[in-house]
Image 1 (cartoon, rainbow, N blue to C red):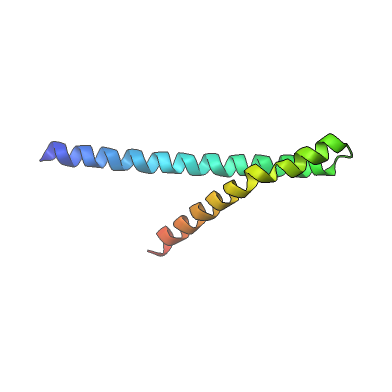
Image 2: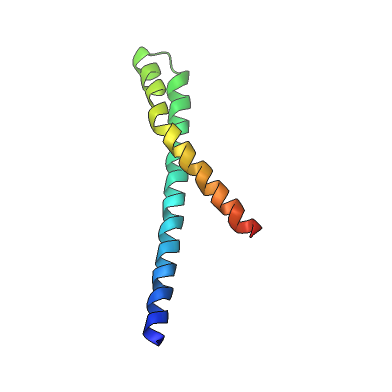
Length: 79
């Protein structure tokens, strides 16, 4: 009985820490990509402008993931 409770507690703690790590990674990656897009968009080169527009492909899914993280955090605070 005690070992079952211990195993389930360890599993829960591990799952929560992995989820928090993914949230931090997604947030930092999104911030970096948005900064890179702005810097590339401000340059005058044709190649930089093209790269700036192509970053949207990776920014959109990360924005959706960020929105999910924020919604889950708000739901966790309200409950």
